[in-house]
Image 1: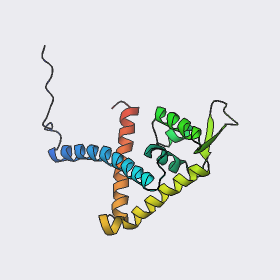
Image 2: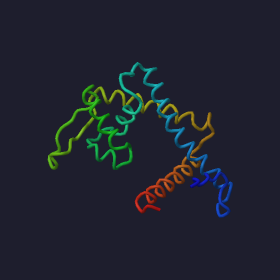
Image 3: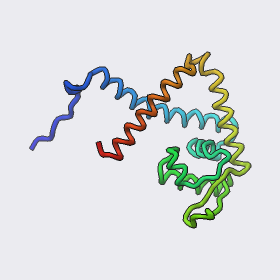
Image 4: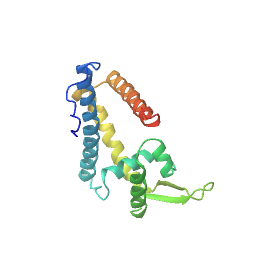
Length: 168
């Protein structure tokens, strides 16, 4: 029995241009995420904050001044499940985070940044502020561009979430 051939041409019901744009979007989303991690890693290296990796630095940045559980970080969409727990344990051990048991749920542990964690957060914050100042003059990306991009990405995220939730 022959295996079905992989379809290389879009079906007649799908616009070829839309197909090309969608596939490019998928590639760009993945590539941009990796580049963001590289940009953060370069900044950590430049500032001699290279004891942790870029994923961990972004985790510290996203926790900010709050106390959170791993579940809250996952539910806010910052990280995948197993990745969060592993990185939180590493950051607690390296004293970037402190942790305490939840008063309401004995299974949950709240984490918050230590002074060492706040320093890394400030490095990432300074990087993003520096990039923001040069975004329009260098990359010609303004507020309207970001609003349009964010709107489209949020709709794509909702579509993918619905795809998973409703098994479309």
